[in-house]
View 1 (cartoon, helix red, strand yellow):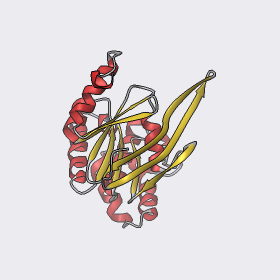
View 2 (view 1 turned 180 degrees about the vertical axis):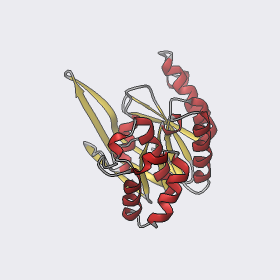
View 3 (view 1 turned 90 degrees about the horizontal axis):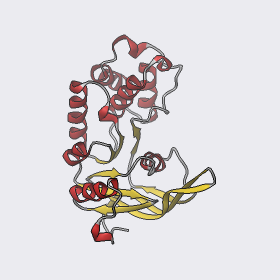
Length: 232
């Protein structure tokens, strides 16, 4: 655990594992951890480490095996995960539904989504007809239209062409001026631009670094099949 700091999300004895072909794999192993308030924290790890699963536990959409997540404010769903949309509703209807759930003016939300998502006439088509990229655009636009204390971001800024990625990053940066975030991305360059600190998820353990560059360095050792020298 990282000392006594002001935290917006706290993990208390959090444990989650899967069993695959008789082998137990841990996403979280009795984690006690505090995500600091007012920061964008990079959540880094190898493929299959459980980063997306950890985000879903923080969001409350996946239950842990043991322990709990204590939330000190409003938390977004994992942006980039489109499972929260009703496939038979249109993009507009899904946006309005989300606005009503969070008590936000639905006209204001749909206006923002229409301007930002660049979905054209598809915005009034059922979401079941959307491509994965279109769903991700809708998820990002809806989440940015709603004010959250913590944004959970899962690879969303990799969606679309270069112009849309730039627009998404700029919008996210403006939201981070007033909110905290936990960001998952395979782009270390993006994490270095957006995040101030980082946490590396490995074998169910979190290694926190106050400087995101140090977390990226830790990850680079793991990708070479090595342990960082400061942990050996």
